[in-house]
Image 1 (tube, rainbow, N blue to C red):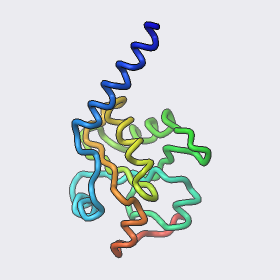
Image 2 (cartoon, rainbow, N blue to C red):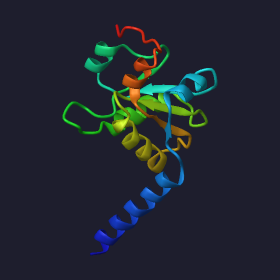
Image 3 (tube, rainbow, N blue to C red):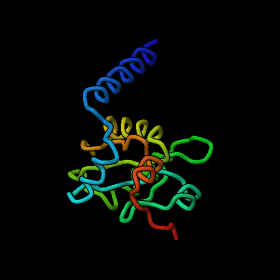
Image 4 (cartoon, one colour):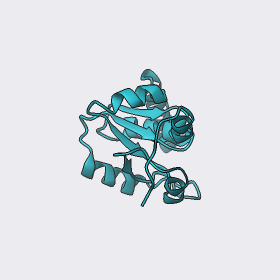
Length: 136
């Protein structure tokens, strides 16, 4: 019973933290933030990078594998190697659905405090005419 109450409290607190901050940005905002100290992290899988290309200069690190399981430890380890917690992190996926989940996780469980999900993802990025580069 105590475990159950602790779990419920943890979920409640995590939801409140994520809801207290607007965690989504539009593609146009992403384009503007590329000129600042912000870092784009593409959390899709390799086959998705090959299909659409990637935003030039983005960090590529898969958050969810093909069956939907989060690769949390590998993802956070990769991120810590190339991004400072003081930097703004802009997560992008195919449509923005996965990045909302990853953003909430990062804000609640890591030292990164400026993390945003790109609404519409790479699909919206390309729809608005912004370019990608081929994945090697």
